[in-house]
Length: 117
Image (cartoon, one colour):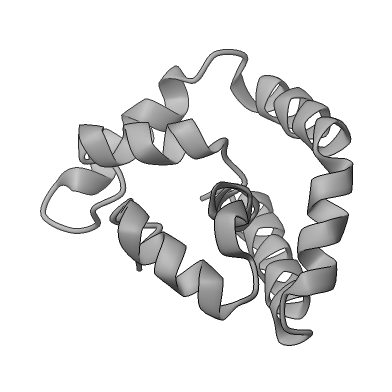
Protein backbone atom coordinates (compact mmCIF):
# COMPACT_ATOMS: atom_id res chain seq x y z
CA UNK A 1 0.00 0.00 0.00
CA UNK A 2 2.88 2.40 0.68
CA UNK A 3 3.91 2.06 -2.97
CA UNK A 4 0.41 2.87 -4.23
CA UNK A 5 0.19 5.96 -2.04
CA UNK A 6 3.91 6.76 -2.53
CA UNK A 7 4.39 7.07 1.24
CA UNK A 8 8.19 7.20 1.25
CA UNK A 9 8.72 7.02 5.05
CA UNK A 10 6.47 3.97 5.29
CA UNK A 11 8.21 2.40 2.28
CA UNK A 12 11.56 2.82 4.03
CA UNK A 13 10.23 1.26 7.24
CA UNK A 14 8.70 -1.68 5.39
CA UNK A 15 11.83 -2.28 3.34
CA UNK A 16 13.95 -2.35 6.48
CA UNK A 17 11.78 -5.22 7.73
CA UNK A 18 12.44 -7.00 4.41
CA UNK A 19 16.23 -6.53 4.68
CA UNK A 20 16.10 -4.12 1.74
CA UNK A 21 16.97 -1.04 3.82
CA UNK A 22 17.92 1.92 1.69
CA UNK A 23 17.19 -0.03 -1.50
CA UNK A 24 13.48 0.82 -1.18
CA UNK A 25 13.41 2.80 -4.47
CA UNK A 26 14.72 -0.24 -6.33
CA UNK A 27 12.23 -2.57 -4.66
CA UNK A 28 9.34 -0.19 -5.46
CA UNK A 29 10.53 -0.02 -9.07
CA UNK A 30 10.70 -3.81 -9.28
CA UNK A 31 7.20 -4.26 -7.84
CA UNK A 32 5.61 -1.65 -10.12
CA UNK A 33 7.83 -2.21 -13.19
CA UNK A 34 8.22 1.58 -13.36
CA UNK A 35 11.08 3.90 -12.44
CA UNK A 36 10.83 5.14 -8.85
CA UNK A 37 10.44 8.77 -9.90
CA UNK A 38 7.42 7.76 -12.01
CA UNK A 39 5.87 6.04 -8.98
CA UNK A 40 6.17 9.34 -7.11
CA UNK A 41 4.93 11.35 -10.12
CA UNK A 42 1.84 9.20 -10.44
CA UNK A 43 0.95 9.83 -6.83
CA UNK A 44 1.24 13.56 -7.37
CA UNK A 45 -1.06 13.25 -10.38
CA UNK A 46 -3.56 11.14 -8.42
CA UNK A 47 -3.09 8.32 -10.90
CA UNK A 48 -2.33 5.56 -8.43
CA UNK A 49 -5.53 6.10 -6.42
CA UNK A 50 -8.17 3.67 -7.59
CA UNK A 51 -11.92 4.28 -7.70
CA UNK A 52 -14.06 7.35 -8.16
CA UNK A 53 -13.05 8.23 -11.73
CA UNK A 54 -9.31 8.11 -11.09
CA UNK A 55 -8.90 5.00 -13.24
CA UNK A 56 -9.54 7.02 -16.41
CA UNK A 57 -6.84 9.48 -15.40
CA UNK A 58 -4.48 6.55 -14.83
CA UNK A 59 -5.24 5.18 -18.29
CA UNK A 60 -4.59 8.57 -19.88
CA UNK A 61 -1.19 8.72 -18.20
CA UNK A 62 -0.42 5.23 -19.45
CA UNK A 63 -1.40 6.17 -23.00
CA UNK A 64 0.61 9.40 -22.90
CA UNK A 65 3.90 7.71 -21.96
CA UNK A 66 6.65 8.33 -24.46
CA UNK A 67 7.35 5.45 -26.79
CA UNK A 68 4.22 3.42 -26.09
CA UNK A 69 4.54 -0.29 -25.39
CA UNK A 70 7.84 -0.69 -27.25
CA UNK A 71 9.32 2.24 -25.34
CA UNK A 72 8.35 0.67 -22.03
CA UNK A 73 10.06 -2.59 -22.94
CA UNK A 74 13.23 -0.82 -24.03
CA UNK A 75 13.23 1.29 -20.85
CA UNK A 76 12.79 -1.79 -18.63
CA UNK A 77 15.61 -3.62 -20.43
CA UNK A 78 17.88 -0.59 -20.03
CA UNK A 79 17.18 -0.33 -16.29
CA UNK A 80 17.55 -4.10 -15.80
CA UNK A 81 21.02 -4.02 -17.34
CA UNK A 82 22.01 -0.81 -15.54
CA UNK A 83 20.96 -2.05 -12.09
CA UNK A 84 21.63 -5.78 -12.48
CA UNK A 85 24.17 -5.90 -9.64
CA UNK A 86 21.87 -4.05 -7.26
CA UNK A 87 18.89 -6.21 -8.28
CA UNK A 88 20.82 -9.41 -7.61
CA UNK A 89 22.03 -8.08 -4.24
CA UNK A 90 18.48 -7.10 -3.29
CA UNK A 91 17.08 -10.50 -4.27
CA UNK A 92 19.82 -12.16 -2.23
CA UNK A 93 19.02 -10.11 0.89
CA UNK A 94 15.21 -10.20 1.00
CA UNK A 95 13.22 -13.14 2.42
CA UNK A 96 12.97 -16.07 0.00
CA UNK A 97 9.22 -15.59 -0.46
CA UNK A 98 9.59 -12.12 -1.98
CA UNK A 99 11.27 -13.16 -5.28
CA UNK A 100 8.45 -15.70 -5.73
CA UNK A 101 5.87 -12.94 -5.20
CA UNK A 102 7.70 -10.69 -7.67
CA UNK A 103 7.62 -13.44 -10.29
CA UNK A 104 3.93 -14.07 -9.64
CA UNK A 105 3.31 -10.33 -10.06
CA UNK A 106 5.16 -10.47 -13.39
CA UNK A 107 3.05 -13.40 -14.55
CA UNK A 108 -0.17 -11.63 -13.58
CA UNK A 109 0.93 -8.53 -15.50
CA UNK A 110 1.57 -10.69 -18.55
CA UNK A 111 -1.87 -12.34 -18.31
CA UNK A 112 -3.49 -8.92 -17.88
CA UNK A 113 -1.64 -7.64 -20.96
CA UNK A 114 -2.62 -10.67 -23.06
CA UNK A 115 -6.27 -10.25 -22.09
CA UNK A 116 -6.09 -6.68 -23.36
CA UNK A 117 -6.57 -4.76 -20.16
